[in-house]
Length: 82
Image 1 (tube, rainbow, N blue to C red):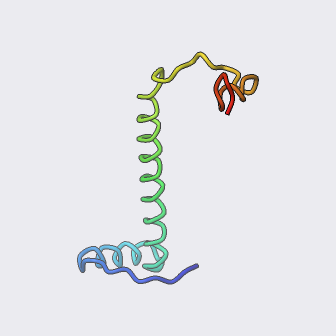
Image 2: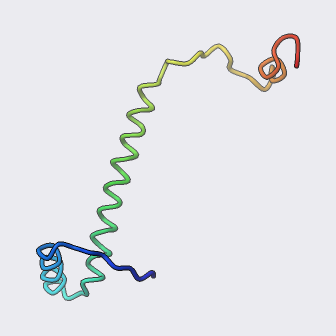
């Protein structure tokens, strides 16, 4: 665990304290739970956004070269070499 300090608006801090009290856990434990859940949601959203952007690139590149390992020298250095 790492200790840190967060500055929260008074109303948010009050809501956090009330919920922690209702659940019989510390404010720190509740903040950790809520932050963890929020980060998971954010990360899923970012991943979905990334795949959506990648899907827009489908079919945009050339597909003629399927086995570049067989033509690596030509691919890197051209027909006449370096």
